[in-house]
Image 1 (cartoon, rainbow over the protein chains, first blue to last red):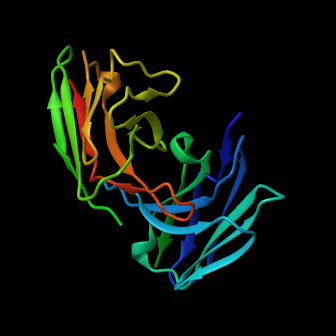
Image 2: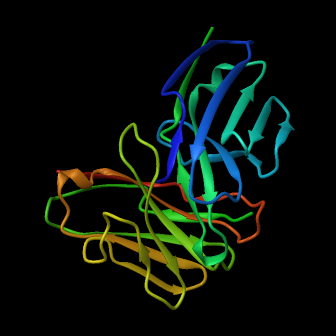
Length: 112
Length: 115
């Protein structure tokens, strides 16, 4: 079956670092995505990993280990505006058979 | 990148009626994806719409309840038929490119409340 697990909720302090983990078991793998979603808004793209290792983009980094079915999103220098839901998604299939499998999301609360 | 205009942004509907949601993309795309996101939940794929062919529905979703049109490469509609309060949700359309390293883009979403 298809399964993506991530923590339901996390809390962190402004200025700190937080790591949001995601484990996946999918029938296929063509990349892993992280999205940010503020309440009442559509998801916005944060990062993409298809090869093992770390991808860094400003305050956000994402890591992938395909052998372990594991990824994490690292947020540095947290700001209040980072309070949002963070969604992990795996692309399964390719061409016209591709689709994204979504985790349930991690609700991050950044406190002053 | 792709910009998607989705409307309506929200609606309140009576049970038993139908609502059609429209998505217009600023570029030609082969596939469009329709999602439902219930309160506090993640995205659930309803169906994938290819131009010129019938939509492919995910388990638990049927064409009679969620008919989809895809008349050209920039436009699609999703109809929520014979609505009940359980259909209250956010509905999102999405596109991507078939290349490996391209992300999905989303419309602004339609917040539907059925009373």
